[in-house]
Each structure stands twice: as C-alpha cells, then as structure tokens.
Length: 77
Image (cartoon, rainbow, N blue to C red; front, side, top):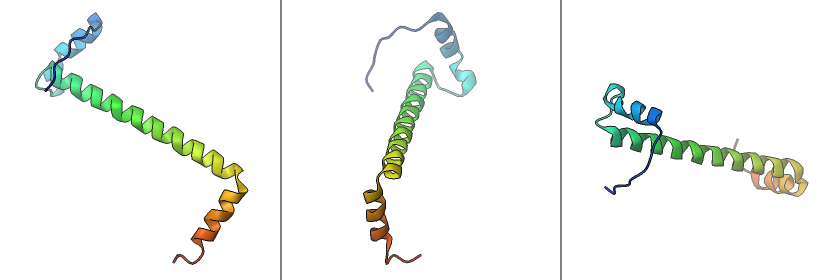
C-alpha cells in the first residue's frame, strides 16, 4: 500500500483518534473508508447529473423520441 503525508485540522485529528470506536483497525483504515465513501458519492453525483442532462436532451428532441419509439416497436412487452 502506498503512503501519503497530509495535514488535517485539529478537530479532524481528534475524530480520527476515535477510529476504533467506529470499528476501524486504525486511523489509516478509517481514512481509506472515508475516501472511498467520498469517491463513491462523487461518482454517484456525476452519474445523476449525466442522467439529468440526457433526460433534458431527450425531452427537447422530437427526432430522438421518434427514433426511440421506432427502436421499441417489435420488442415484447
């Protein structure tokens, strides 16, 4: 595993010092979980924004709606 050096606020350091109370082996495990959680949240937000943009484009594009309807015809329900 790679190591990195970084700075945190005093309150963040205090929070990390309670890592075992939250079920983590050590501060590093807690920080890795927090980074993974944040990364997943950011990816989910990006996916939501992308879906919203596609929805807006679809709602405004009649040709795209017609193309979709044509592609759906013949598919079992």
